[in-house]
Amino acid sequence: MHEKSLVQSLLKQVEAIMREHHAVSVQAVTVEIGPLSGVESLLVEDAFSELLLNSQIGRPSLNIQAVDLTIRCRDCEQASSSPGLTLKCQLCGSNKVQITHGDEFRLMDVSLQIPAESENSVT
Amino acid sequence: MNTVDTVSKTVVINRDVLSEKKRRAAELRQQFTERGILVVNLVSSPGSGKTSLLEATAKCWQGQHKMAVLVGDLATERDAERLRPLVPVEQLTTGGACHLELSLVEKGLAKLPLDDVEFLFIENIGNLVCPASHDLAEHLRVSVLSTTEGDDKPGKYPKMYRTSDALVITKTDLLPYVPFSTEDAIADARTIQPELSAFELCSLTGDGVSQWCDFLVQARRRTVCIPAA
Ligand SMILES: [Zn+2]
Image (tube, rainbow over all chains, first blue to last red; front, side):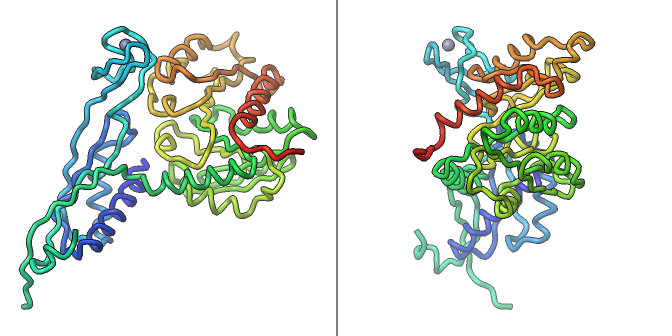
């Protein structure tokens, strides 16, 4: 169960973004979790609500976007999506594949409430 | 009440949650590369024989290559105590956490005499899930799998094997007594990571240990800056 430490890193980044934009609160945080990320969405949600209690960012909602596993074949150089997490090229059957999507845990975007007058002062 | 007019704004980030930790790990790895130290992160389930493998490696290299070990343990010092008579060891106690973090590694490093070390081993916590996500500044990630476990393990823990550079199958002296096929295990792992180097050995008898040690010496030659003698 390492989701807690990962969510800690996530919240640190959200806090930094909040400061950078002089936001008064954070409304929503969107993350992407791939099926090969080694990160369990339910545990991320639990850790998020627990760790929010000690953070400065208010009570934002957490949106988790699931990503499909997609691979690129090193033999036929084609991309394909991979059902059932099998790491095999769907076109030629080679297992010399590179994961292009599906092993990530990414912070996608953050919705902030910022003071109206500072709207144009931050790029 | 003093209310401020606010507007909503969505900031697009699209960044790996661990990007900052990965950047720090890459920096530290570069320092190891420049100092001529090959860093090896050993991952496995509990009881696969990581400590025995390190003992066997130390014995194989006695007087030839210098190694040091960072031992991750949930609570006890037992593994560190076993290795201490052989090599410099520093214990990292996680207090129950399921994986080692870079900050713990950095803390342990400060206490190791690294000046003439050629190989630094990190003995990770016995767990095949969580350590897979954490870059500890290693050059090589090595999965250790014992013959008393299932030979279908690689398929069950794809991320761990996917991110490993080598697989070491331990306790081969037990092969006559256990339903374990080293060929199946290696083939299973290579469907996930086709470039995986694989070794079969017995730390107790020393069978196969020198091939593993040679691999590490070669890997060090290829990977780090070795000062001219
Ligand atoms: Zn193909």
